[in-house]
Image 1: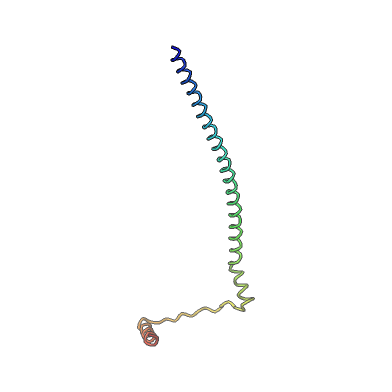
Image 2: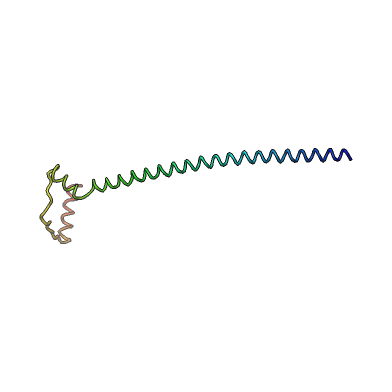
Length: 113
């Protein structure tokens, strides 16, 4: 009978020690998970803020691009810096029938081949 009680005590002690070790491991895993979750949350917030800053810079650059490519600005540079003037005359249409066009193509091809 005593042997049986000693075996019961040993198995209960082993059970409690095993449960304690499992509990400690679970606690350490939980702490590590919480810590990594906090770090990930901070990193996410930092990346969101960085994304907002970059999007703001992109928006500013798009506005600058629109200013630089505005038709009025291009005309102003063409007139002031390059001395160009707008074409005010209407271009004339020259009507050529198909036979004349084929003749012109043949002459050009013969000359530049």
